Image 1 (cartoon, rainbow, N blue to C red):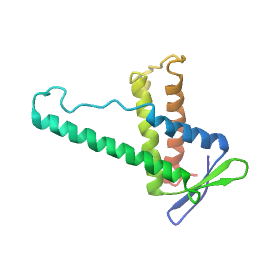
Image 2 (cartoon, rainbow, N blue to C red):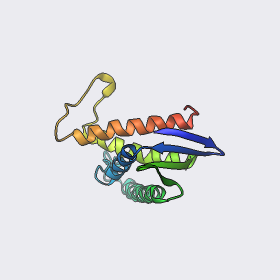
Image 3 (cartoon, helix red, strand yellow):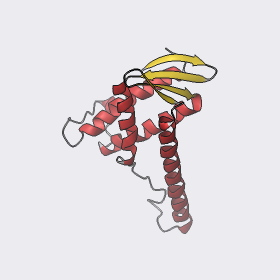
Image 4 (tube, one colour):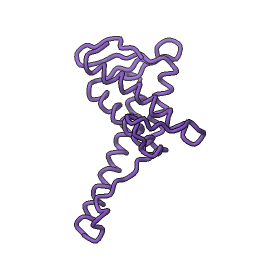
Length: 159
């Protein structure tokens, strides 16, 4: 990925064809690596107000996830926002808000992969062995880390 320009609140970012395919693949896995729902009512399942709040929360979270998915799909399908450049490369022209949406989508799939790996504490040296069952989750974590670090650097004005 390469930042081509930053003018007037818009960023032009170039991705080669492999990077673009990896971005689409990572974001596409959001549907297959669903997040574990945290219950508000674990200890107090008998309180009807908390059960109702949990149902409202689940509904709002589900709607948010659907809207985010649709927004990301529209964004990456928009020929003005995502233009072909050269041999399969893409130039994404994004605002701060659109970069934020990409970061949300990437973080969502990253956390889902981390949860599926059993929530290892990487800072304490917990490293799952690479095997057929967890390879995809480890790939997702590495790919999303790279995309997120680049996008955050762009937002912070680094080149």
